[in-house]
Length: 298
Image (cartoon, rainbow, N blue to C red):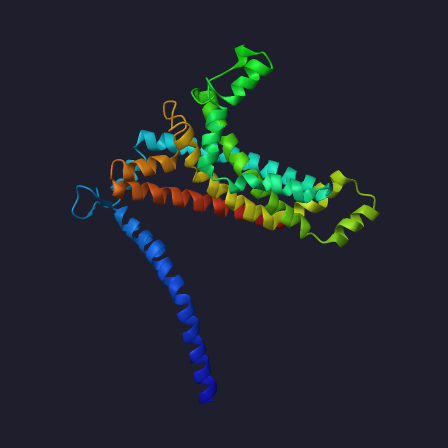
């Protein structure tokens, strides 16, 4: 009995020893910064000029909802995230269905579709910045010189009506392949017996998709939906690289406002409060996505 107990204790100590580096990493780079920033969010702290944080209660949170630029950045983030979520989920599902039903050269098409996710979003933003450039951009060149419609050339990144559309397009291009792979994995997990039974019963492809395939993808909806929500709400690189928040803060998003307050104005307390507001919003929409997907399952 003592030998068995000693063996279990030794095994537990060895397990703790192997997990200790990971625990240290998580503590130093995740848990400690999270706790510290939560404390800062209730304090007035400029980390350049202040010796130490001064607690001020919830004044940072109140100030956030009185800050017109933050409210505008929140609106822009919601607009971006809503259109991005809907478009990337629909396109990802359509691409996955095409790959699922038309299997010829599927490895080549999978590679082509997935490749953009490997490209860093900042680099993709630089590429699309050139494509949408008013004077030297590829898009205006094709419209003006190839199709001979110079009257339709446009400053895509300098007008409020199209700047956000351009940012949404680069983000969708870079991530629709990942969503498609997630949906394709979900499609391949559906029992072939169910699909074969539908085929034997004479169900059309449309009926099979809407009556069998889509209802059996609820788990994929949750995973892909949460990933799309996180990517949509935490967007930063494309608006920063392509427009810098212009024209007139029309593409300024929450992450940009948080970054500017933290590392441009050094208001770490206020920036921490903004960060936690964004985190709460992301958690809320992630939870809502899970609930809606679970209800569809039921």
